[in-house]
Length: 231
Image (cartoon, rainbow, N blue to C red):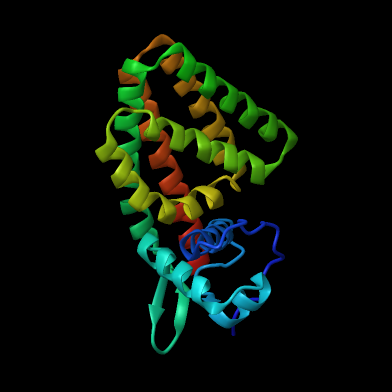
């Protein structure tokens, strides 16, 4: 049985472009998958989504194709679109790759970061810490994700950025699940603090080391969550 649709909070773009509308639908659905509103194994029913969003089925169908390209859903003739289920072993393997890419990005950024870029990152870090102190997990996660993306986007290596973009959608759900562990959340905040210290001092080795550990710890926590679910 398909899951009930969560309440719509996003606003569609004011455009007649089918591509832009499909991308907006994909963003709405992607965010719901990442935050567990569509849990692994749940079905995304094209007809119901189009009715909820008050759109024709064409942009919804195109959005599902985009999610399939991200590796977030599987599409089959018999079952339609379903959110991908990940094993604990696959989670560890995925985060091994993400850790390699993001640690390289952190290392490169530490070597080249400008005062202006550091100021932007300081602002994001400060916002994240406020949300953490408030216990606002959703905004904490969104700002945390923006920090990870910022580091990759500004590392000066477009190949790292492209490879990361192809994988990160699959990893975001794991990152969101991991912050619900109180121990992991506290550990993660400290790792972010350590990264900022490394970037402030331009210590590329320390930046790479802490960021690799950061992503590996997240993968391990996600794998443990999956193992508990299977047990």
